[in-house]
Image (tube, rainbow, N blue to C red; front, side, top):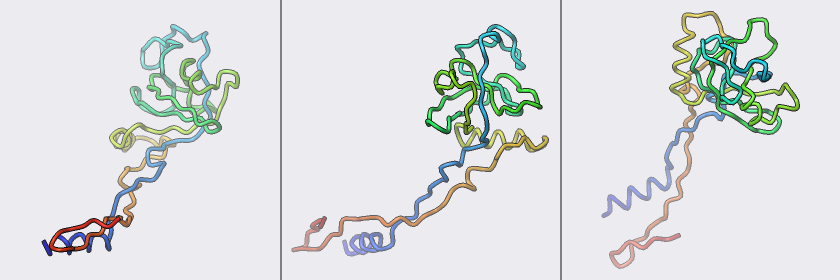
Length: 173
């Protein structure tokens, strides 16, 4: 019993260290987004798929086909998950072209162009991209292992202290 009380007391003084990641640990790129118009409906994409305006897909200069990314609009915070299935030309001023349906979710139809952040959806996806681009030319993406974005902080724990009264523990809040 004394050991338990000593343990509770020491833990309340010391606190636990908890891991937190940077809010942007999955961020890979910032830039301008545009969207595919209806004239591309039914045409083949670079991956060989047929483009459909109602799909949640996008074109990017370097991301591998099949990569799922979160595209977040800067000014209103709207976001959409899209799968990369097409290529932008290397000379394009745009960072990503999204389908019409994705553009609707981003509320960018009347504007045509918006500033966005592009993020991968998981640490595993970040690792896959790091491996994919390891032997390739610099893709212009911010790729870093998620573990480098982890910070350990000592966060004080607020344990209910206990005192021994008549041989029984009584919580004090």
